[in-house]
Image (cartoon, rainbow, N blue to C red; front, side, top):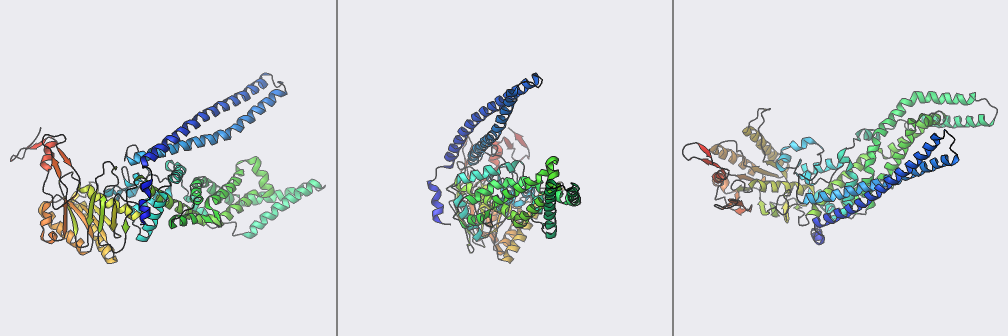
Amino acid sequence: MNPDLENAAAAEPAAATVYSRRRDAFAVEERRLARLSFRFSLLRGTLFALFAACLFVILLRAGKPGFEWWLGAAFWLVAFLAVLPAHDRLIARLRRQGELRQINEEGLLRLARDWAGLPLPAAPNPGDQGLPLARDLSLFGRASVFHLLGTVHTPPGKKTLASWLLNAAPPREIASRQEAVAELGPEIELRQQLEVRARPMEKVPPDIEPFLSWAEGDPWLLGRPWLIWTFRALAAATVGMGLVVALTPLTIGFFLIFVLINLAVSHFLGERTHGTFNRVEAREGEFQLYAEALELMVERPFTSPELRRLAGDLTLRNEPAHRWMTLLHKRVELSESRHSALLHFPLQVILLWDFHILHLLEKWQRAAGRHVRGWLGALGRFEALSALAVLRFDHPGWAFPTIAEGEPRIEASGLGHPLIADAKRVVNDVAIGPAGTFLLVTGSNMSGKSTLLRSVGVNTVLAQAGSPVAATALRLPPVTLATSVLIEDSLAEGVSFFMAELKRIKLIVELADRCHAEGGTLLYLLDEILRGTNSQERQVAVRRVLVHLLRKGALGAISTHDLELAELADLKAVCVPVHFRETIHPGGDPPMTFDYKVRPGVATTVNALKLMELVGLRPEEGTGDATLG
């Protein structure tokens, strides 16, 4: 990563200050527009009341009120109708100011990690939340990475972001994303304008797959050019015959012959034509929701190759995607004449209107239809990059990691958990590797062992998605991440806790074998491995699992209460022990504190009995009984 990009955010105001200023400014404008909207409402009410009064006088005088009352009613009605569009535009501005105010309020909630107040975005695939890696590292759901990155609202954006979190990118792709994220970081106005245009899709996600299936399909009418010329000829002949009948003594019967022919053609092909209209019209309106967001991407000149490529993907025949979408919308509006029988019938029997509109729609389909999915994909990538850029803006001290082939170890300085607020986050220097060694994390209950493993895991996920990480520096090779942190039994499936744990370990071992065979590197994070069995058998099993992982060149860390693991013959020489500790304050409040700092060596203290005493559980020594005090 370019050092200039690393230091670019240092001169920016604190994110909380920016969010507070913007929130207040939008709130002031929102209140101003609300007052103006209220006045418009009064004006609309007054104009309608004057129109109603004139109408009442006309009715009261039994149709003989005088011309001035008719003129007055017409004037006030026209004035009322003229005010409506301006008021509608004002209401739209008012709503947008309210949305922008709320976006900045959510920025403050995100900084504080106020998960209860921060809206929870829906994940694109609810099943992702149940994946082992996602559950262990809190990638989805409340108080998760996806929740933290909750500025993504379009279905393509959610799908892209979820894929990036679950699937590591290659180093070159990561570097490209990092550069784009660094460029978007300071662009708070651009990012928030993108979000405010996409937010409506959070409440009612558009389902445009039926529209896409039409757009990517083969045109029906364009494949029959002879039919197009037939429609044109019939329309021209009908109009021409109508003029001849109007200007000469020729009987109207000749004109009606062409009308009947057009009626027959319309009846025979109307179901296919209207079927296409209905199919396009039903989802085209939802498709238009993307237009404003796409427009933002082509208005701004970018410097990073990734953003320039995305903007380039939104141009077709020197026209940006949103203009193609506007063109489609205008043609769909022409097809809506069929909903008015008084207007549609003469247009159809004289001009064969529907077939000409179908021709226009299929011309759009052939020219742009197969590009639509790519446009939405580009928007999804842009939105995902923008969400990662929010982290860059919110936490300018976070570093972009260095990910390169051949790195022998994972080495982090000032590493903390991204889901913990800055004021509460405790950071540590962590090193895992090289291959043939593992990190052994020991310590008392509640001292921070699991949080350390999760910190490594979550930051690895962010790093390989192209995001900055909660560390002052991080270097690592490309890795496949595997975890065993949250294990649950299943009564429904008849799976005990120990069996569930064994199945998870089996998957990790198989993944290590696959990575080794393919020349990759596995990073494993095992929290209290095989806790579901007795101490003696656990030591034997853990030794076998770790020896196998070490032989496969995997990098990893395990946490345990079993301090004897560090003394096992096969493991003592290859483990790198670190530990956490607690401080007891006899008679103090609180009686026990933790500093959550990593120290070298194996833990020298335990605190299980002390914690039992703190909750009022005092086992009677030698009796097997316990009392609550």
